[in-house]
Length: 341
Image (tube, rainbow, N blue to C red; front, side, top):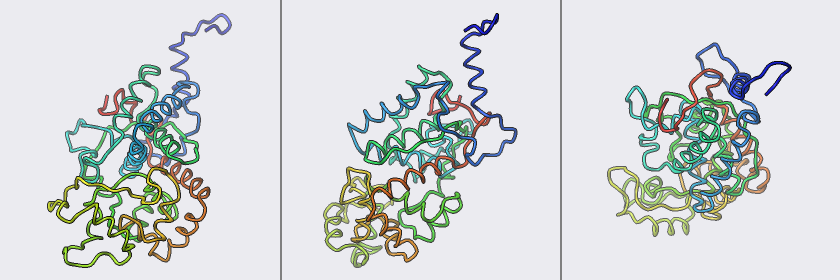
């Protein structure tokens, strides 16, 4: 393009915008997310969010379980070492076992092929511009919307990390944890107890393997009675779906799965909280939200107001997406999400 007597190539223009919109950071420490902003790609890859949305929509239409998988991918990525797409790496230069190979993730991750297709399309349209970390954030939002949630804005500008260590996934919330344990975990990440309750509503869609909640049905000893906080008719249904002899004795994931939300398992909505009020929380950590005096009132409020939960969930996801991000010249923009450059 021409400016006065000067001719500026499109390459120079692109470099200018990339430099302008990715703030320089002198320190090597991670940031608090304040360097992210909405519309980050408006000038340097204006079709980025639209490409993500179209591909996510295609997959979710085929299988709603992909929506739950994409939301979980983003959460598990951010909660470990920050939103840096470390969960997507198959290997790293260090040779350590990566996050996706850990017991907390293992064979339960879904949606990886969606991210691969999005990245391939974006690299064709805007090579070296859109980070895998931002793709995860956009994809989680779009998956939530196509599953029934109100849309919410996603600030971008994250860069991708070069490290991924399975051992660091030990801090991920576990299905057997109490409210106090979960509150402490979320507090370490800068998230409040209320945000923990709100984000738990993602369990409105998706499935859980029988082995993740079988102790609520049978106890450590199959002869023991079931968890008294579990609705007895719901427990009977679960026992039919998850017979005790199908639970692996080695602690591995069982083959059989059941919906996390028994009321509206195909829609991301506040029925998860209605289920908790009825004693139909599938995981110990789910039902604990209703049984604890400090979180019970919020469960009631969210169960009665679907719009309120949807709004709060979008805001909480926005806060989650700013967790310990890399920006500026930190990290890199991966050419492929499964490996470092």
